[in-house]
Length: 486
Figure 1 (cartoon, rainbow, N blue to C red):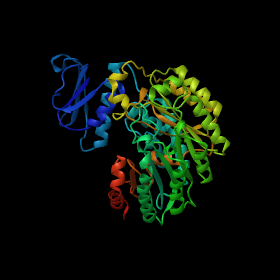
Figure 2: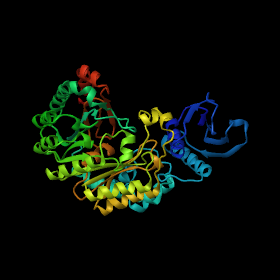
Figure 3: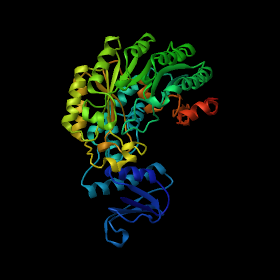
Figure 4: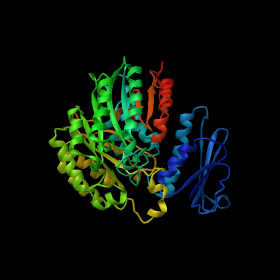
């Protein structure tokens, strides 16, 4: 364990995120005053917020009774919170680099949307040299990640020119069912086998929420629709027809740029389900193997085979789907660089239209984290070489990066990147990351975001439990009324 002691509250989240980035396998405790936990501490950090400066001291295990290993102070103006936070993180980053003898690809950036920085500067008319210097000096970002973030920012800006921020909105529909729960998953999802008998009740509740949304936004332009989860294709073909039909019969889709359905798990895909989606005019689907290594699929709880992933893809192609995304995860347990390359080779033979590469992020709600004692023998590997390999294969498949985001506790402190062939980029993916347009989200566990003209964002969320969502659908609609009414 690593303990961080503050003399008063301030920037706890930022400190925790940065220390955790250097030590992903360690528990990190940040507290005001002396920590109660004393046993098993590998080293101890003390940060004092003084009148005009911040002083930080690193101690060996055993705490303040020992001589400090490092000590540094920085002058700050506490009235400027952003600059104070930047200077504090710079001190921590330099000291952690010196202690661990390593740097991080994204420097001391701990937010999930690093592209916001170059995008804002590009919109202001700043050139790449200015952006590069700012990101190097302020956040210590590597040259490679600066190039990537600028490249993605330019593509995002081009995509977003099609979007009506003032009168437009996007719609997310959550289907919280999966064939099984993956080892690393923390999303709202429930085994469909246990809920199959209530799926129609769930759709009944969903229909009420969709009808409310259609009335509330009747005068606005619907730009994108995304049906995600969970795994929407756990529903039957008839239920999928009903769900998509709800949208088509109640919303004006004449200006809709993209309608996506996550087919996701290959073990949920059947010909009749794909036929239903195809006949309803769905423009984009995802088929997500995550890996093409059989042993890993079994380990992480994916109840499908590599061959099922391949067969599902070719079935979708045969039925005319011409915009198919595939998701992969790097840093999965016990996978090596060679395993990742073999996965990429098999995906390259399929030649999907989009490829989303995720760096494994271990969330608190994931089984892999909650029951870590059961999985102590697993190894996790994610390196510069792995990330470079995925980028090279994407380029060879004719794809370019068009969106990226980061998560807490990511393997190797890297990022998730979406690659796409020309004209195949997922617009909704950019909108959800850049938070420039209102997104109305319906279904259990979904979170709606209202974006105001001044850039302010307010949220409301639905309950995660399916039974509670069905029973309290009136309350969910009331929450939206509070958020979305002018």
